[in-house]
Image (cartoon, rainbow, N blue to C red; front, top):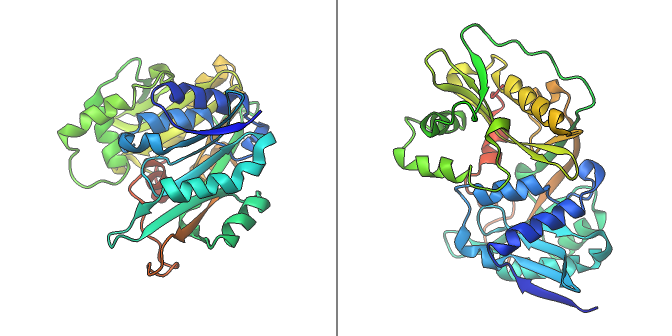
Length: 326
């Protein structure tokens, strides 16, 4: 059959790409393809540039998706989801990303950041041959926890209690803990409330799996989003944030452990998180790979490759940078 390339069509392809990721999930996520919950979280994220979704490229063979290249929140980055029998499409996918998923610096210089699994030596050689340089500061780790192991016992300090959003889904309290937890200054802007509602709008968001720790004054001190994908029995942690006034008290760890316990009760056997913070490792998460960022300037006259443009603010990057959430 002939392989065809087409543009992403929303909302139908939201589900079809998600189904593709579920069908071709590999144990330990060893191919580096995105997990379906990460794809879903992307679509509920307030930073997502929905106006550019039709620039996502989809390759089909016989009407079935065999590969996808997409950005996460903004143009300028490329992630590659590939069926194991169609690895030969990588060069074509990279060319497509350079033509359609690039962004521009403030001076109009086009660039692209391509994310490549560290174990994919063939793809690594390809991006190097096309003039990409590694940008280590944007590396994206993936950690795994076998839920068959026992979880740490957690004891909250006096006056704090754990609950789920099924019990208290106060969007203002959610907005406050995520705003402060990701180190934004001052009070959260009221207009951000609609963003918190959007984060709960995707089909598999579950309030009973989203865990918060409540402070004595009723505010949320810590927040852990948790996703469950039942076909492959995986839990996915995203996002986690702790108010600066309540860090170093084990609250983030407590919330993550409770979310994992609830997913285990549903049948999950493994949990994943895109962060290598120490408090995840203290739970028992172990790194399985890094997705390395490779950057290329697509026209002459760009800034030195040692100083690539800063990524737009993204929840996962902020989470990795904190190091103080638990």
